[in-house]
Image 1 (cartoon, rainbow, N blue to C red):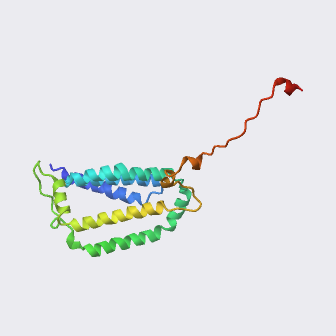
Image 2: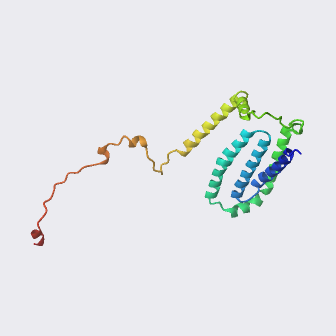
Length: 208
């Protein structure tokens, strides 16, 4: 008995349910945890497709780093759940309409002729020494070299822009300039004042 189709439908069902619950639950912490479940399930599907490198990358990068950061931010923010619950029914109808429009547009762009086993058959089995990491590298740095470099440039520009916005000077904030601190001299910080000493009076003069 081939267990792969059973695992595929099981993981697919869990993935669809968890992804739908991410945008429907009202508690942001539960939404983040459900997104972690969706990532794990998607990684399991990639393992079934013999894409172990992508599965491990998804678990280590997104679940291990990004989602942990999301959980810290969500739990540190004092979110008023009452206001979230009040606005859910208000925006439910427009959200459903927009989601339906997006699904229809995706279906029109992709088309029904691009789905099915005849277009995406089962992946061909490989030997034990097959490395999908090597195959991904060959495709990424040959066929998709220019898009890869363009994405890297865009990320670098985004990082520089974020740092520039975060480090901009404000008039109402105090900050230190290390370049000016290293140029400080002793004469600028310490001032020695010479004062004439006074003679201490004797005990007899103090009593008189």
